[in-house]
Image (cartoon, rainbow, N blue to C red; front, side):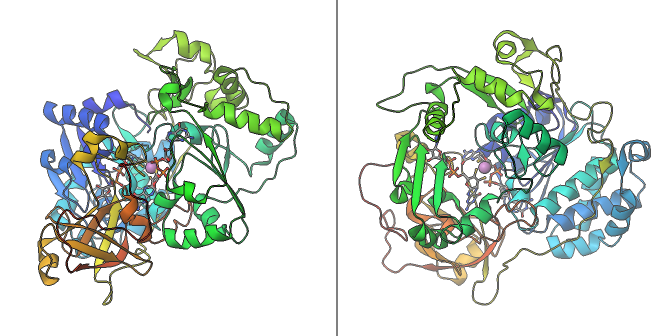
Length: 551
Ligand SMILES: Nc1nc2c(c(=O)[nH]1)N[C@H]1C(S)=C(S)[C@@H](COP(=O)(O)OP(=O)(O)OC[C@H]3O[C@@H](n4cnc5c(=O)[nH]c(N)nc54)[C@H](O)[C@@H]3O)O[C@H]1N2
Ligand SMILES: Nc1nc2c(c(=O)[nH]1)N[C@H]1C(S)=C(S)[C@@H](COP(=O)(O)OP(=O)(O)OC[C@H]3O[C@@H](n4cnc5c(=O)[nH]c(N)nc54)[C@H](O)[C@@H]3O)O[C@H]1N2
Ligand SMILES: [Mo]
């Protein structure tokens, strides 16, 4: 996030696009509700009528995968009506000319045809965004989990730059992070392109610095991203170390991956529960959950926070860092860290963005009224950064990137007449290894379902509560049909949480051209009623699972 969470309540125009905020980020949604209660305008751009649309001034219910059209058309209006922030564009950006030329052809009228959002609403949203001083954009997976996800983000960044909505409180561009500490994992360099602190592995100066610091030779070429790795399993990759991911639930086109895993030679798993991936594991290292260990987590607003052990772990479970260090020692290193504090110091040592953050400061200081420190934080005296790009864009000049619309990889056709999208619900968490153990949550959301528009259900003889089979070119699963006007006609939606009806048996593993992020939000599908499928009866999914207590 370029801004901080507490800044949200002071925003005057909230543009929430591709984020089911009240279910996936309830705390942030709370701040948005406060803003709306104070009089802020909320606009939601989402193919589904999510809860946030109830308090929104407008719901731009676009067709999935057409965001570039919507956003370029908004930019078109801003340019055409001279609503750009000329002074900001001149002082702080480069490349506007290209974007100007590109968006000229994205007229709101043509955008209406492609996106399904009226030209009038597009004009209204563009004007309000451009002319409101404190206007903030909030986005999540509805923007990124597409084969053109990076294009979507560029199109959003273009809007921010042309209106100068950056470098101030309560206005900026805010991707809401997903899992606990996924921000911290990225910060630490758990990506194929960066060392800690977003220093590129293919930058010769950075490479030289780390070779010297670590005393090893390093390769300058980026590693494989997750999508590429999964496709290389059983071909170039024959050993996997899976730490805190249930790949058999969360990876796209998972039946292909399962087949590949049969050719894999060795799989180590480090997790807090026996998940579905355990079926392929040769070794399982039991790790501790968040409340059983010390360390730091970094949240969406770049805040490094100290977490403290509250309870003892059960059985032989050990903190993730202890397991990893023992493993490193067994591989011949002489690493001797006495705890998370020393490990953190090692991580920030060569990373200028974090150089001013230390365990001691996290223990003792309150900055900007809160505990924890927000990076960039360059020196021990630096109070950290509430928002980014203060007094100038961090990279020097904000770079406009012109993008053209590219359709999603697999769209409905005669054989598969519906567009399937997937995501999460309030009551379960991702692979649900954690939430499907809790009776209260299970009661709230006991089984897999698929939302289908009544008009599409009628054509297929499907009634509310029927058992249906959802199929795509990759596989089929069964779930309960929920007739709902939350989804657009010709669109269906199912959550990813249920191991007996894995959404990822269905999804396409086409990846974003830059990041490799899978196109979880769009593929072609068909649905039919399962004869004899009584309501409430448990139907096994596409693979065998032992019966027993809820997982
Ligand atoms: N309760 C709960 N909370 C969670 C999680 C969980 O599993 N359960 N998971 C966490 C994780 S890891 C993450 S990454 C976040 C994800 O948080 P979100 O991204 O908010 O979650 P999704 O359910 O994937 O919803 C994405 C939204 O994008 C919309 N969408 C789909 N396709 C398109 C499109 O083409 N364009 C636009 N504009 N919108 C589209 C969907 O309708 C949906 O409202 O949530 C986190 N929080
Ligand atoms: N169809 C579809 N698929 C998706 C998505 C989608 O929207 N649609 N979203 C994608 C996204 S954004 C995400 S983030 C992934 C999430 O997918 P996963 O990362 O596979 O799911 P999680 O349930 O978040 O957790 C993974 C594992 O971490 C374990 N775990 C929890 N805490 C700890 C810990 O402290 N240490 C260790 N070692 N393990 C721990 C849990 O028990 C679980 O087995 O799914 C992706 N897959
Ligand atoms: Mo995520």
